[in-house]
Image (cartoon, rainbow, N blue to C red):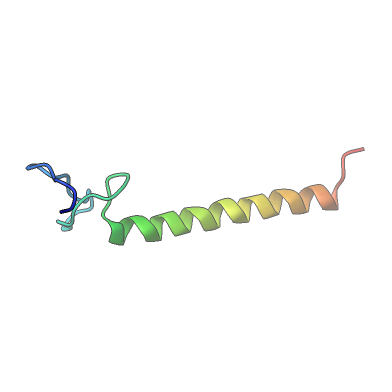
Length: 59
């Protein structure tokens, strides 16, 4: 049968996008690229921190 949906469904918060809301105010098409980018940024920051610690150990 599927999930019952509200009459006034939330829509994607980006301009000119009328797709149904998925997460954090965005539709699936806009949410996943943003999520992937945030994961790359978090992983990259972690590597830089670890690299600095290995290069200059605190004694």
